[in-house]
Length: 127
Image (cartoon, rainbow, N blue to C red; front, side, top):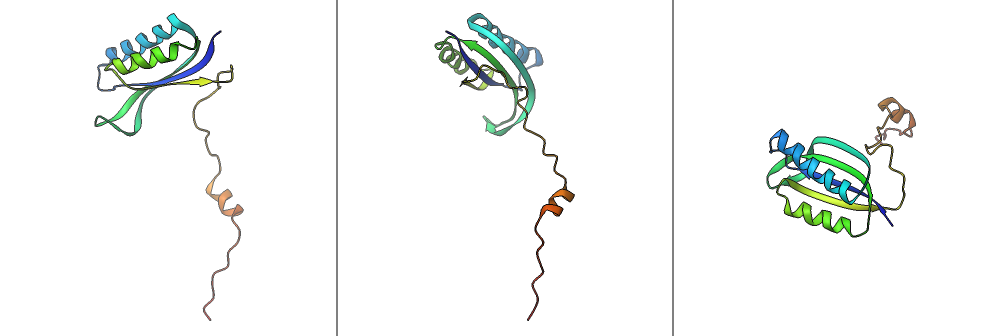
């Protein structure tokens, strides 16, 4: 029985463009061989939360897939072996539905709405 997973891996952006694409294709093909891909989100270059080996950016790829329970351990093992991969994480999902968007929701509240909603505060008087 196949379980649902999501994997996010970060490719070293200092590689040439064709090397980045080759690393991405290598792992996507590995997932295809061992499971069923549901969706691929290529986020591209983004700033890292903290530097990894003095590198400030990474090339992010998010993949939703279904596979046997043993495959995520093998995928993590391959991430650790490959020098092109800076970080990789596989997470089991309980739901079978792929989220429509993985981007953070945009806050549409304006400054005027915030000021109107704030309680009125009286200035202290000098006595």
